[in-house]
Image (cartoon, rainbow, N blue to C red; front, side, top):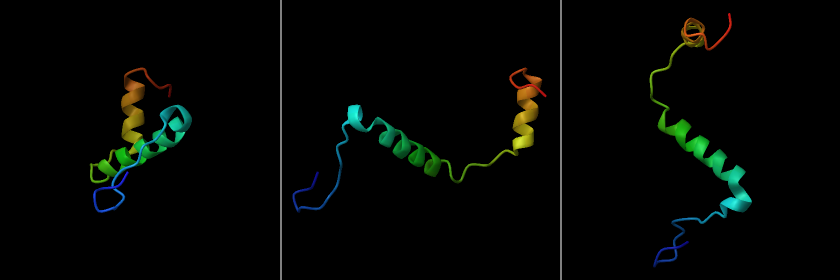
Length: 57
């Protein structure tokens, strides 16, 4: 899609045909939006999951 000056400003995606592509785009956008969030060491996440019974030791 273009604006009144002919510049590309949007795109339309047929989700029936390109659902996998949309999922990839969505994953990238979510990842970018969380780029500056504080990270948690994997060992801490695993320990919490084990304590909650969601992961076996």
